[in-house]
Length: 80
Image (cartoon, rainbow, N blue to C red; front, side):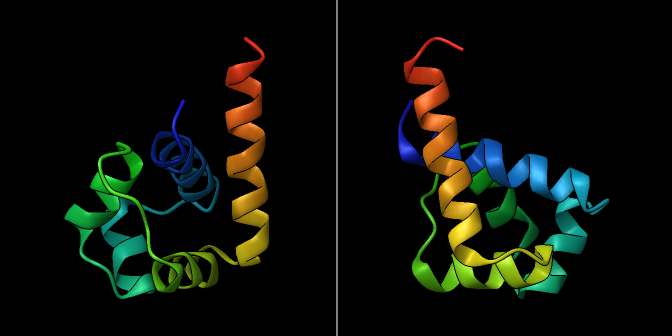
């Protein structure tokens, strides 16, 4: 699994846990809903600025999101 796909999975889980729609997350993070969708689908890779915006909107530390992406990639690589 590549980083973009792993980030998308992590982002979708975090957004749902926060009880936000893509539209709501986009508004909170000052991003378009369509861009949030592309990120969740793994079709776009976020910039550092985007990661910072999303982390703030989701009330996570940016590094926490990155750690979750690394864990997701390792989980898939190990067949879990």
